[in-house]
Amino acid sequence: MPVFDAQPFALPFRPETTALIVIDMQRDFAEPGGFGESLGNDVSRVGAIVPTVRRLLDGFRAAGLPIIHTMECHRPDLSDCPPAKRDRGDPALRIGDAGPMGRILIAGEPGTAILDELAPLPGEIVIEKPGKGAFHATDLDDRLDTMGAETLVFAGVTTEVCVQTTMREANDRGYHCLLAEDATESYFPHFKAATLEMIIAQGAIVGWTATTDGIVDALADR
Ligand code: TIU
Image 1 (tube, helix red, strand yellow):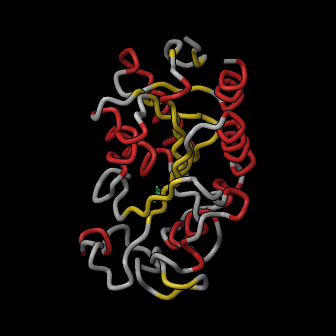
Image 2 (cartoon, rainbow, N blue to C red):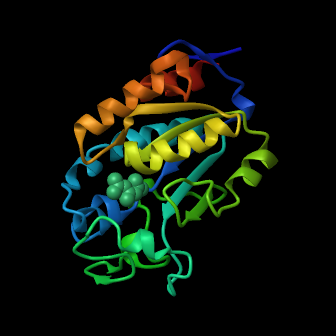
């Protein structure tokens, strides 16, 4: 069986049951005027990982393995956005407010779109999710079950919010979870560092980490 050169130890995987999940690489988190900036963050950190996320996507595409993109967004009537979420964070622009890229985190608005360089190709799965975790109020688990997925590789933003929440949800559902450490980013470097550290602690109790090069090489070498 091929292995990913991972931390805290190598992760064997079956290519036919391995999928990539790219979390929330949306304009709202990467561009000025979106939700990320409205929370007071420097969004340029997110733009910097785009080429690396693209290499990971290209590696999975070349290997012919499934790819899932998630988008954090809500219905225009906000019926799937609890007030507790909308009021949180004291943002300059709240979810549903009109901003320079349209209504913040509302499905179909320009700012909610996935970045052009990382746009889903036909046949790739796109999951619109109202939560930070991608399993809450979505059909992601059914989709993964249908494809027989066992091992999930994660990329995207932000490391300690939507990526880590989704990885932990997946870990509890029995998937082997591997985070591409250079294809994920936080607005806070120390939050990313701490997240990588806690993922690999205690014998991979909630997952593994590996570099994008290592992951792509393992897919190509199998
Ligand atoms: N604020 C922050 O770090 N993240 C989010 O609100 N959503 C995601 O992580 N996608």
